[in-house]
Structures are given as C-alpha cells and as structure tokens.
Image (cartoon, rainbow, N blue to C red; front, side):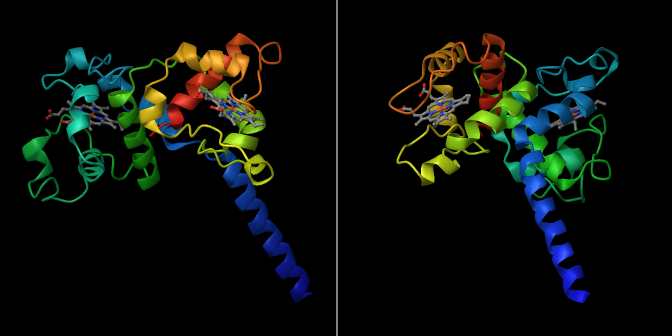
Length: 220
Ligand code: HEC
Ligand code: HEC
C-alpha cells in the first residue's frame, strides 16, 4: 500500500518535471508577454517610452532601449521590484527613479522579473526585428528543432548524443546578432552543412519566419 503510494507519487513528480520542461518558455519570450501586459502602457510597444499613458504623465517613462544598457541585472531587479530602501548603488530607489514608475514587488514573482529583464536585454541589444509570431515558432521548435538544437537552443539536443554534429548555438548573442533575419530564413529553407536539413516545401514561409523570431528570443 505504502509502496504503491510512493510509486504513484514518484510518477506524479516525474510527470511534473517532464511537463514543466516542455511548458517553460525561454525567459525573453515570457518577458515579452509580461512586458505587453504590465509595462507597454507606459513604456510603449518597443520600450521607447511612448506608451498610450505616457502623454498624460509629467515624468516621462524611460526609453528602456537606451537606459537598460548601462544597468546591471541586480540594479534592474531593484528598479523594477522597488524592493527595500537603500537599494540602488547604496541610494534610495527614489533618488534615482521617481514614484511615477510603479513598484512591482508584490505583483510580479522573482522569476517573472528575471524574464522581464531578459526581454529588456533583448530590446536593448538586438538589431533585428521579430519578423514572425514567436509563439508559433516556439511550438514548431519544440517539435522539430530541439532534437538537434536542444529545447533552449544551446545546440545540445538528443541527436547530438547519437550522431557527431555541432548544431549552431542559438543562445549566443554575438553569433546571432551577426546574422540577418533573411540569412536565418535562408539557412532554414535551404539547410546548412552536412546535417542541418532543408525545410523548404516542408514548412511554410510563414512558419519559418515564426521560427526565426523564436530563435531571436533565445539569444541572451
Ligand atoms: C505607470 C507607468 C509605468 C509602468 C506601467 C511601468 N513603468 Fe517603468 N518607468 C516609468 C517611468 C515614469 C519611469 C522613469 C522614472 C524616472 O525617470 O524617475 C520608469 C522607469 C523604468 C526603468 C528605469 C530606467 C532607467 O533609468 O534605467 C525601468 C528598468 C523600468 N521602468 C521598467 C519597467 C518594467 C519592466 C515595467 C513593467 C513591469 C514598467 N517599467 C512599467 C513608468 C512606468
Ligand atoms: C538533424 C539535426 C538538425 C535539425 C532537426 C535541425 N537542425 Fe538546424 N542545424 C543543425 C546543424 C548541425 C547546424 C550547423 C550547420 C553548420 O553550420 O554546419 C544547424 C544550423 C542551423 C542554423 C544556423 C544557420 C547559420 O546561418 O549558421 C539555424 C538557423 C538552424 N539550424 C535552425 C533550425 C531550425 C529552425 C530547425 C527546426 C525547423 C532546425 N534547425 C532543425 C542541425 C539540425
């Protein structure tokens, strides 16, 4: 009886682990959705500070594509959460950031704030626009690309343990920013090297563009 219960519990834990591994969006992807929901109203769709509410505000929302570059993750976390006094480089948060920026400590979890920071890093470093729907891209990547590229895009998918190959690491911002959207589309359509398959005629152009957008959000 006890043993059966134990096995049952272990199976439950195991299935949680498995389903979590698949349900977890990469941080910048998740951050983009959270940003749209909580931040866009002031900071605008591109983070440039031109959200619909900004015209009515005396203190203008920051252009995050500029300011975020000079801020560490730790400082950003403090700015966003508003947690504690004496927080930012030893100074009160409000010496640096006015009350016009809400404090999110009790609204967003630590993980959500981490995801937001990943997305802020994306919008302040990526030269490339998202050309398609990353949600669609995520679903396709999970099903057809992770076999070689790994779910998080690090190039360590299950196939690499069977066959010697080095799929590109999609999380490397330096290599990724050197490639244009169109170059990525071409590689996916026509294949590359010995093992990267050509997907032209197998998945539509729209889906390939969705995949490129998803890949962009992996680089962080
Ligand atoms: C009600 C409007 C409003 C909302 C909503 C809002 N912000 Fe802000 N935010 C501001 C304003 C205004 C400033 C500039 C404050 C200042 O300069 O004193 C700011 C500043 C910031 C800064 C600091 C910029 C710097 O100087 O480096 C960050 C980071 C930031 N916001 C992130 C976010 C994130 C992430 C969200 C969503 C979770 C968010 N904001 C939601 C109004 C808002
Ligand atoms: C059978 C393994 C395999 C599968 C499946 C696979 N890839 Fe690849 N991919 C590779 C390998 C290996 C490379 C490195 C090719 C090279 O540079 O020699 C690569 C490279 C790439 C590149 C980089 C091209 C460049 O310009 O450097 C992109 C983008 C890419 N793959 C996207 C995808 C997408 C999207 C999918 C799913 C639709 C996918 N791959 C599925 C193995 C695979």
